[in-house]
Image 1 (cartoon, one colour):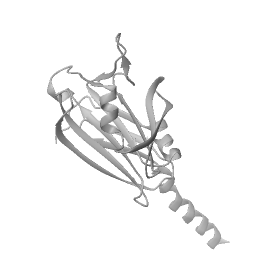
Image 2 (cartoon, rainbow, N blue to C red; image 1 turned 30 degrees about the vertical axis):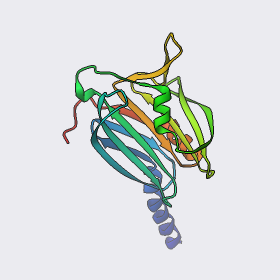
Image 3 (cartoon, rainbow, N blue to C red; image 1 turned 60 degrees about the vertical axis):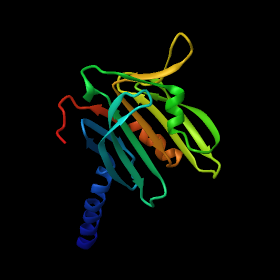
Image 4 (spheres, rainbow, N blue to C red; image 1 turned 180 degrees about the vertical axis):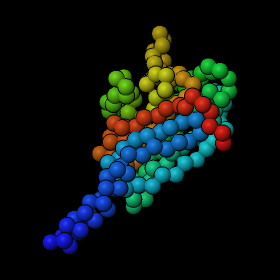
Length: 193
């Protein structure tokens, strides 16, 4: 009886860290990225800052959170572009079609627009299937406004001082779990690198 009770307590103790470890928070540059993938087993790698320019010539610091699933065959990239380093209140804009083209797979068999809501706003979410049958998902928003804006001429563009782009090669259930739980915050105080 004592052995059974001790065994049950040991099982609870060993299972507890797995349950509590499902929520993740990553600090990268001036950002905090948090999400919860439930019991999905994954590893996290980060990269940045790296200094880049967008297609309009606007400079930014880039950061990436790589989430690699257990078997290494699927992964998710959370890509952050930070324009705040280059002046107070600096905002950059990306034409939506150009942004989409930059992040699309090289050879697309099909492209499907799906619905996704971030903070009560509809965001762009696209499912791609390439010619090899691999499926990936793409979405993006700014911390100031969650989706592309259409101007009076019908052109769509994204405006903000920081952009978040998520590209996922994970299955839909894992991708949806990430999208439903992700929170990206730019910390007020600069992080020294």
